[in-house]
Every structure is written in C-alpha cells, then in structure tokens.
Length: 249
Image (tube, rainbow, N blue to C red; front, side, top):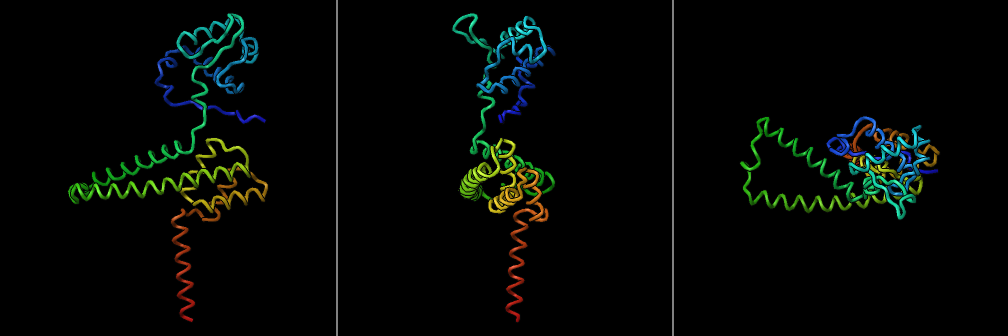
C-alpha cells in the first residue's frame, strides 16, 4: 500500500506572485496537478493528459490550455525529447516534498523554542524587571553565553541522537514514520523522555493498537498528565521519603 496519501504545502505560497495572481480555475488546477504528481510519486511527473482529463473530469483540449497557462507563469514545464513524446512536470515538486532530516527538524524546533524564550524575557523586562545589561558586565555576559552554548550543544546532540533512535524504534515496531509522526515523537521526547516513550510504543505493540493516539494516551496515563521534570521530581521525593522511613525504623 502506498504511503503517499498526503502532500505538503507551504505558507509562503500565499505570497508567491506566480500562484497568487492565478484566476480561480488555474489556482485549483495547479493544486490538482500537485496532488496528481504526489499520487504518481515520480518526483513531480504528471500522468498523460488523457488520464489527467479523465481523473479531473475535464475536456482534453481545455486541460491542455490550462497546463500551457501554468507553464507560462513558471509552475509547470513540459519535458520531451520529441514534441509528441513527453510529459508534464510540476517544477520543484520533488524538492518541496522531500522529507526534512532530523537535524533540520531539530534546528527548526530550537528556533521556535529560542523565539518563545526571547519573547518571555522581553515581556518580563517590559513589566518592570531591570535589563540584564544593568546587572552584569559585558564580560560576565560573554562568559555566560559561551557556557550556555556549550551546554546547549551537548544537550542538542544528545536529543538528536535520541530522536534518531526513537524514530528507528517506531519504524521497526509501528511502520513508516511520517513527518507528522516524527514531530510528535520529538514533542514527546522533550516532555516524557526517551525511555518512557519507548515503553509506551512497546505497550501499544503488545496490545496490537498501533496508533499515535493510543501511545499518547499511555504516556498521559503513566505520568498522570505531568511533565518529565515533574515525574522525576516526584520519583526523587518518593525515594527520600522511603529512605527517611527506613532510617526511622
């Protein structure tokens, strides 16, 4: 069974003049071409015009005219060694639909986190906190930043390695890991930790309920809705309470 049941579209298409200036008919036709290209799954190649016309319930001649219009604005191209022996192709389709590797995904995730943290600091400063530069010298700040970068690099490397291993565990037990699945695994990795996510996957496999929703439910049930840090703090508290009880005996 093919896994090409969904397709990626980027928000930037809203500001792409080649697309934004299309009339309603050509706008729809372009997106239909992208869907057909994904269904064929040959890097952007489209079916022949007759097959496309039947699939889209359109007249062959009318469809050809629309494809030519999309070609003129740079969205499609016709590749052929001979004039009557070629095929239509969605430009840059393969590049746009190729999977994002783990390191790129991690970088995007860190950028989102850094933006959130920066907004939080800015908000605190606006609410009356003294700016950091008023409390520390530039030299102290430089040293702190260098130390933070070293620590972040080690943590990022470890998280990347864990994510790669986690994706491998998922694919070995659950099947193909789409980009949506990898994003969810990355989120769970940060919230619950590697070992807990692996345990949840194994429980789902044993129960023969191989869905992300079921795995997420297991994680929430195991942690009772608490974060990884809260779980660790509770476990540490339980340990010391048990130790104190034993010493008191």
